[in-house]
Amino acid sequence: STEEADQDIVGIVHQGADACVQLFFVRKGRLLGRESFFFERLAGSTPRDVLEAFIRQFYAKDVTPPPEILLSEELPEGELTAAWLAQRRGGRVELLVPQRGTKRELVAMAEENAALALETHLLSRGSRHHAVLEELERTLALPGPPHRIEGFDVSTNQGSETVASMVVWQDGDMKR
Image (cartoon, rainbow, N blue to C red; front, top):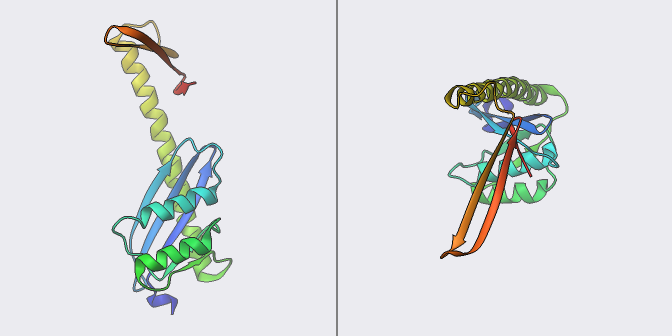
């Protein structure tokens, strides 16, 4: 029965190139804990790709998968991932994407928590960014916060074969 199930519930939300995965650990029908995982600059990755990579990395550690994992998205390689998880567990593992009922409500709760955690994460990241700019302005006695920083690295191989590179940071991002 669902009430006594060991399951993990995984919800993902994304905003732009950022995403948050919320993981609930349910053992014997009780919520034992939850964790948030953040992913940044995911240009080109779908939530399904992120979710699958997360599942594979999380359970590759010393974590035994439960018999049931509820997901907010189908995984691109769901059958292969389920087989790998079953091997890690030493028993069957079901990957489910519930559409209705109690299990869907649990996944929706994980998604809501992920959305709140992502919002908080993005706000704190913006605050950290602002604090760094203010510190640079103060330390370097600049007339205002820097918008562009260029750095050079010049290397030689025993005095010859000089190679130089420049890195550029502009408005919070590294530029190619």
